[in-house]
Length: 238
Length: 182
Image (tube, rainbow over the protein chains, first blue to last red):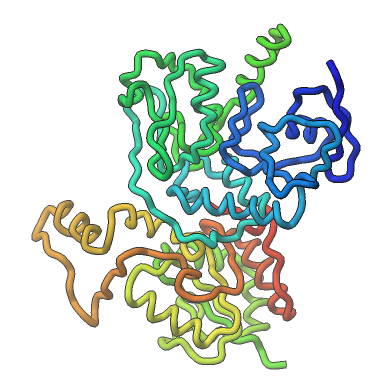
C-alpha cells in the first residue's frame, strides 16, 4: 500500500493511501470537531462540522469523507472555519427544539458539548420551533424528533452493525426526519431486534430508553467499539 | 468612584435564575457593599425601573406585553444588559408553547380544551397582560452585552460574570463553567 504525505496545521504527516483527512488528523493528535462521525460505521459528511481548508482551493472539504492526497496542505483552525463551526452548531440548535433543561441527555450530550467547544453562548439565528412528534410505541425505547439533528448515526449503526436497517431518512430539506420501518410506529417494526445500538449511537437525547428522565441518559459507546473491534480485528475481549 | 447601580429583572422565567443568584450566599454581602441595588424582585422594593443603571441581569424570555414593556425600559436605561439564564438566551421552556402556534392556539388549548370548570379565555386589559404571538429570547428584541446561559446558571457562574464587571472589565464567557446550556 502506498503512502501519502501531506501537511495539516503545519505538521508533516505520512499516512496510507485511502485514509481520510479526519483519520490523518486524529492519528497525529489534531482535533477536528465532528457530530455525525461515529467510529466503526461509514461516514456521510452530514453535519459539516469537520470542514477544513486546503491551500490552492476555495472549496471547504469535509474531513470525514475526503481521502488524503499527496502534497495536500490543510488548515483546520482558521478563523473562517471556527466561525462556520459556531454557525453550524447555532443552526442545529435553531433548527430543532433543543431544550437542554428538560432533556434526557442534559449533561451527557454531544451537541451540548459541541456548543461549548465552538464557544456558542447564544444563537444568532431565530429559533424555528417546528412541530415534531415523539414516538414511544416501542416497548423499551422512544424517539423524540424534536431533539434529532439528523446525523444518521442510528441509520448507519442499525444497518451496518446490527444488520436490521430499521431506520432511514424520509422526506427532504426542512421536512427530513428519521423514519422507522415503512413509516410505521417504531413499536410495530418487526425488523427491530431491540438491541439498543441506536440509543448508544445517538449523540443527543433524540433516541432514549423509556423511563429515563432529565439528565439520566447514559450511553454505552464501548459496546459499539467492542463489536467493531471484534469484527475487524477478531478480538473478542472487552 | 460611585457605586455600580445594579438591577435584576425577571420576565417569562420560573425565577430559578434568581434563586441561583440568592445561592451566592455570603458573597451577596460583598456584592451589596460594592453596588447600589436599584431594582430587583429579590433585592429591593422599588416598583419602577430607574434611569442610569450600570448592570442588569435579565431573567426570562419575552412572552407577554408586560415583559416587552419592561425589557424596552431596561434596555433604554441600562449600560450593560446581561441575558441571564436559558430562558433569556434561548426562550427555553416558556417557548415550548411556540410549537402549538400563536397566542390564540395556546390560550384555547390551556383555557378551553383543558378546562374542567367554566372554560373561558382570560381577557382583562390593563390587569392581565396579553400574550405575544411567540415567546422569544431577549436578544431577539433588544441588543445584549453579555450572554450567561444555564438553567439555572450556577451561582459560581453568576459570580464569575459579575466580579470582572465590578472591576470595570468584561467577563470571558467561554468553557463549560461559563456557557453550558441546561
